[in-house]
Length: 76
Image 1 (tube, rainbow, N blue to C red):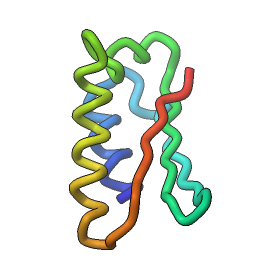
Image 2 (cartoon, rainbow, N blue to C red):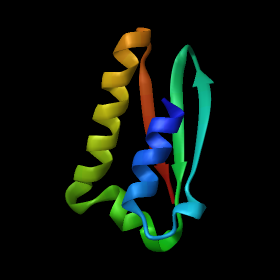
Image 3 (spheres, rainbow, N blue to C red):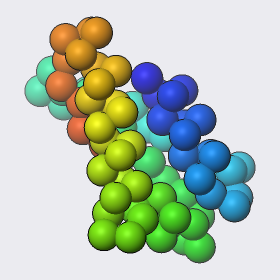
C-alpha cells in the first residue's frame, strides 16, 4: 500500500525525488505520512482538498482487503 501511495504521489508532483511516504502503526491503524517539496504541496492537496481526499479514498479501498483502518496525512 505504501508503494501505491508513493507511485500516485510521484505522478502528481514536479519533483518526484522529494516524495517520501512513511508508514507507521498507531493503535492498530496504519498511518501513512506523505512529505513532498514545498512547491508541490498544492498539487498533492488539490483545489478544496479533492486530490488529498482521492488519495485517502484509494488507500481506504486498498485497506479493505487487509481488513485494516488506514489514515493518510500530508505533511507540510
